[in-house]
Image (cartoon, rainbow, N blue to C red; front, side, top):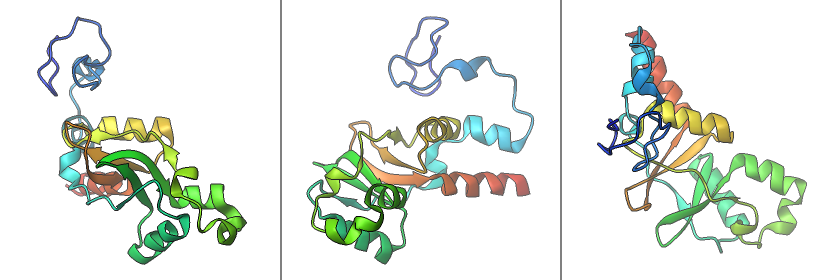
Length: 170
C-alpha cells in the first residue's frame, strides 16, 4: 500500500505509514459527501497558513512568558531549544499550574510549568489528523515543524474551525 502523503510503501493492513506516521485507514473510507467532509480528508494544515510561533527558551522566567501571552494576545508560546519544540506553555497551564501563586513564581523558569514533549505536525498533514491529535491529547494548539523537526509555526483549534466554517458557507 502506497502512502498518499509521502509515497512510502507499507504492508497492507498497517494503520499508519512507517515513513511519515500519517494514518492509512482513510484509504478505505467512503467518498466524502460534503465540502466539509472533503476538507477534513483532503486539505492539509498548510491551508490554515500557520502563524509564526512565538517561542521562548526553557530558562525564560514564567513572569516574562505571562507578559508575552498578554501583550501579544495569544493563547500559547512554544518552548524551544535550538529551534526544536521541547514544550508548550498555554493560558490553561497558567491557570492550572500557577493558579493564585503566580506572583511568587514569577522568576521560576517556564520549563517547570510547560507541557513537555509536545505533539507536532508538518504542514502537509491532513486537517483530520490535526484534529485527531488535538482531540486525543486535549490540546488547543499544535506546533508546526519542518521535515527536520524545526519549529515553523503554530495552529490552533480555532484556526481549523474557522477554515471549516468557511466550507459550510460554500
